[in-house]
Length: 431
Image (cartoon, rainbow, N blue to C red; front, side, top):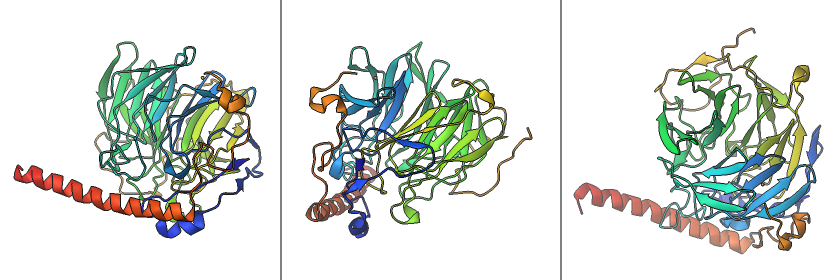
């Protein structure tokens, strides 16, 4: 069972009373979704990646929006959690990928969720940081920084290269694609993503890199469009739209297909999380439904191991709720497909590079052809349920704390705007 706690998010103070639910959050009956052992930590806005038979969940926010450096490792065979060496600095909305047995984390926001970049590295300031984690040594090391500071982007590894696309800095969606060559240790620029998006997710299937959904900016309407990059042709394609727009979700490659699950849509009202799960078949250029999540969450860790997709931690209410819930779903592989099957990505319609940004959601139908880690003694093998307080050790938000956070958030928001305006004025006047 997981526990949820909620802190004030920007512009959400009027909804706090409806969000205050600190009781047990059960992973309900949802077809073949299976409830896993709860994580020792309750967090949201994490990143994650699978290495072998383990899934790492990193960073994010803990209870009451506390920035986290924590790294948890879930053993899919033993249904057990361990703690690994923490991140070198707090990160949220970062991107994580595996490569040859190591874990790589790039970008993200740092610091407090309400700071808006006022000297504390908040949500308006992304980082260029690039880190490598070696599970055998339980050690982090610095990699060449990325050319662009960004967070909430899509990332994936294909043919020895890391692709990072879209994402945001200063809360605005970006289009830039950058590529890191693990062999040469250098970054290069690729063709821009045609449609800007952030709070997106990425996956690599069939020799192609997918950038799925997202939104144009904080609070914007979720996108349904899906963009696919063919590295050999240096070309982006628009493929079939999602059945439902989503942002702040997880994507994973499984059985030669792309699975997406979780996410949030604040415009839909509370709780604002998305239960629907979808699976994309590149051969048919079609999205199909899978069983809905038992505990819909956004800002969750998502990965696949074999034929199962895993949804770990994340918030069960839009904004800054946190849980330690874990769930898994076995995805059917049609025609006896192998777990590592990679089907060709031949379907879809081309998108001109440098095309205009999509102003929002689109219902235009797609063209469809016929055809990880050390065990921490303090965690006691990380197998216990989370404590009634925030599982990261901080207290759940109380009414007073919420009011205080809202006041601080409003003051920091106003201060950040004034500071940014003053900075622009000084620059324009030469002061």
